[in-house]
Length: 404
Image (cartoon, rainbow, N blue to C red; front, side, top):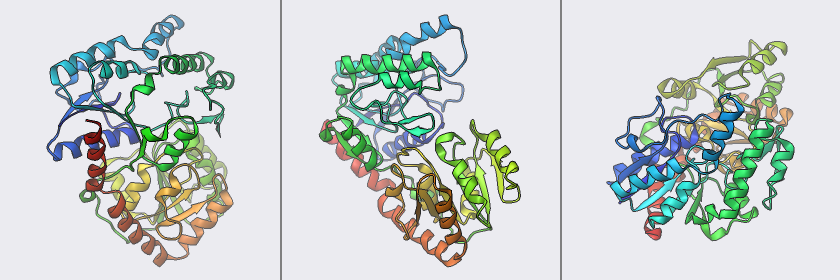
């Protein structure tokens, strides 16, 4: 089978790219030919299909109003992406297309190109972009579902795209254009990595028959569990507002233990300043961005992982990586997080944004080393049963074969 994998970033940027590259590897291992379509970038993983990639566009860069207006058209409908994808299809003749993050730099124009060539389309919804202009259902730091029923003007009213009137207007226009064109109706099957996202898409009006819940996966042999630990627990991921890190730091005022906050992001300096102001410097360490074996070592040596998010997380890879490593997880009761953590079996759930409840859960584990190890063993067993590569391949191949 020739599978066209589409993602606008062709380097390891976040969770969607982790899945994108893992799926590429999984399909290749099973004898399928994988064809990539993405955007050019100096950080890209080498690809034999890079000549077909679209030119790099960074919408986050500051630029003049004239340039912004010029880029806005590509943002909504990229003729370049449509043309280059059409050439790639003609040269490689894929049997099916599996899309990931494609909006903005590639744009929904590619959906029309795929349909023109009669290629079935699978889309893994790593975020809410299909039903929410700002993709997070988060505005001014709070959960927001104001755009339900295609009331996208609420995004403009709240300026929920980086607080910018122009960016919010652009995303609202994009949402209405593709609603009118029915671009997303061209997708044959939508995959959600959490059941929570599946239910939310249905709640927002997407036909339930088009959506299938298929959890993310990791390769089992890339993670060796270790149920021993050193004297700290850890958060790892992006340091941004939606991750609930202020709740975690507030909880640390009531915890007698050591925390490592691993990662980087827009809140890094503010979080460090807050920790210093609250006198938490002896309890909280900021090692910075870590990846690969260095990050795995930090996870393996930790007592447990904390995921304090305050937004609708989908299916955080941080939890899967912790489980694969044999570590318990304390997570907030929001989005897809509770689906991954079996309360009092593989970890503990706390009330979202409640620092007292989070402190209670952290202290509960710190007081019982045997419980930490038991939860870690249960986590690894659950990972092997539900989130391994072969189980995932079976589910994905069923979808592909059905559509073809």
